[in-house]
Image (cartoon, rainbow, N blue to C red; front, side):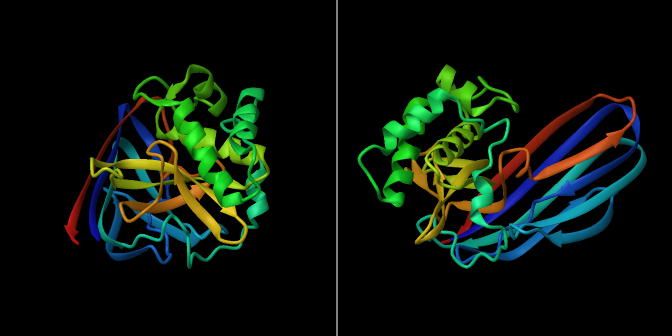
Length: 270
């Protein structure tokens, strides 16, 4: 299918800032499951800087704004043709060794409860693909999807302890569980058009990719208990949400920052 995207992120400051710098990871990944028909990323009033493709295959582009800066608007629009690859990241070019994604971060630190969940879910199977599916189901059952109960710095262990969270928490928990049983896993940021039952989602989303040696990277969405399909648009990846963040930046000044995000996805044609 072909999906249209209109994504606006606005940062407002209650006092003018001297300058602002943005690092954007807002470009569709290149692999067999998606192709950019058209895609445009810009920062209103900003100066486009250099861009590069990192070792994980993700494009990163820099922007800067000279002060006084009272508002920063990051605009994304385009159309992506997607194909269902059953979650397999086929045809994606990267040079980072999958074993690098066994490293823990603060957000994905493995406590006893996460380790127990992973080992219980994995018991009785030696097949890594089966193990990955079991882990995704176990995380979905252990953490109910409840918006607003966690925050940006909630860890996988904290989300599991309270038994509630959002897609970021499901993803961190699944990553931690996979790493607990020796399977490399990473955080993926992107967009989701609709869930498996057809319910519109139309928002930024996050899911995990788990390395299954004889297949490669496979996307698992524990929040929706499925693999990434043609409803998903993949942007970038990292060890956790912080590393995979679509927008990272700094602004110098005394102002306090507020952020507003608007995302709209639509199906252009089947």
